[in-house]
Length: 247
Ligand SMILES: [Zn+2]
Image (cartoon, rainbow, N blue to C red):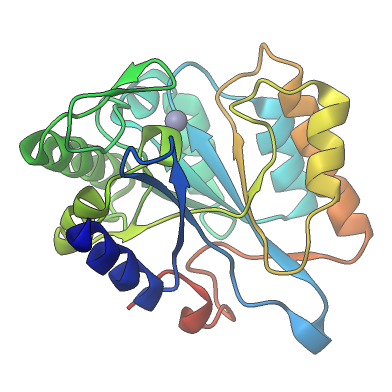
């Protein structure tokens, strides 16, 4: 228990507020915000997970047309299966940062349990393989080594968080779930995102074109823009490092 408390205090120093999931399981889900826009007007960071499957062009096309930047968390598998979408994003490098969502989309948890039905990486070596394998895939496909990591299910143990950081990656939490794993309906997703507050880090999915949620993600982001929100990538200029989960 003492070890856990020390680890949680450590996370607090990083600006991450760990929300305990699964009551006593030792699994944490980091909450992360960016610094509010203040006098410059409200701002949010849109982060989109590309876990597997295909690409939701309802979202990607809207972002390009509206010149809205986003941070994409891609797995090695999504990169392999979506070369055209990746090429399009890279052609708009001012709008899209491609970051690391893992090699095999297994939760970066160093003990063998199931999270949302997914078997975890299961050991420190498994977490390392998931993180490094994903980073290698992003680097090969984009020519740029990712700096952010978000594991499948966005859950960790304090020890796996420390391991990921020791590998040189920042861990991307979030503060607003926009689509609940692409399971929300169109209107639900739209209203959730449209209700974002200044400084929110929004998470949604860009790999489920067959589901209704994506249309709501696109319209929710448009509603924020109409309200005067600005959008930044996690590593976007103008975001004070102090507002992020950095040392
Ligand atoms: Zn995912």
